[in-house]
Image (spheres, rainbow, N blue to C red):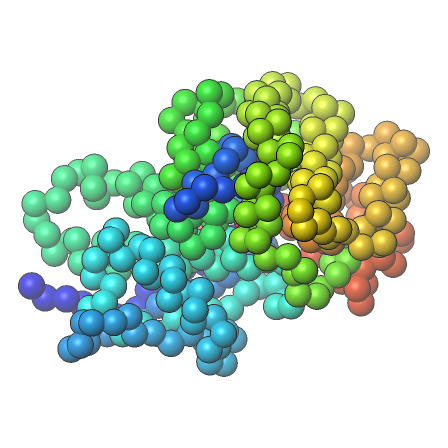
Length: 355
Ligand code: PMV
């Protein structure tokens, strides 16, 4: 068998959850379903160079971020390789050079795990494809794009749960549920139902309120849902919210959309405030931004809302048709609450691309 040496490259975006994933079981199985907008501008670009090696006892790889060797990235990738080895049995046959960069500035407080892990998973899938292409017995199913994307999402999940929602766009569901047939705990699937035109080109302006290191890693955060007094209610609520979201996405009712998305964000933070140990991940400026958004919405009747990840930064969501007044508001009022007046304009996107 002739194993290839070579190089593949992918760019893969971040995503923002509308219904949040918070709490997981063994092997990165989510406790509740989530749905996200795939983003467009915030992405990771990863080049994977691979070279057949002699000694096949261990993993062998180097990681570079912006051309600089990053020893501190190695443990995360090492444990990712360990988890996916059974699904990619060729991993120990190669020495890898992983070169990665993000379109958003690092240490901006934007998590790069979803874009980074999905980009790496896709590179590994491209390598698998090259190896499998040597196999003439492969079925049409195993050669299909669906198989490729599904397995890429499956692998990305094992790197970072939410990364499984970054392979495709523009709305992705992850976590088995009754609303979306074919949904799975193991990989993300494209949202299959009718979506109102208002959600096309939906905007997400990310306000960098705090660029510091995350106070709580998401691994620790998910673990805090074990034995959490409100866990079961929260997991059920996510199922119920997904059902509500289906109607909202179809009708385009933005008042209901805003209420549901904001409630999800605040619930995520409420879970962290009511766990043991407890955490407050918002900063004073996070609350100032939220209050300013509510004031602006009240005054102008424009459908602007916010969502949050497990940190202090605020994602401002709004339809493209309102971009001019909303950006005006962001620039005149909200940038004052951002670190170094830093914000990033993004929008709903189509998923990863091979380069
Ligand atoms: O993918 P993780 O393990 O970093 O978890 C991220 C979870 C949230 O971003 C807080 C919510 C979500 O659904 O993306």
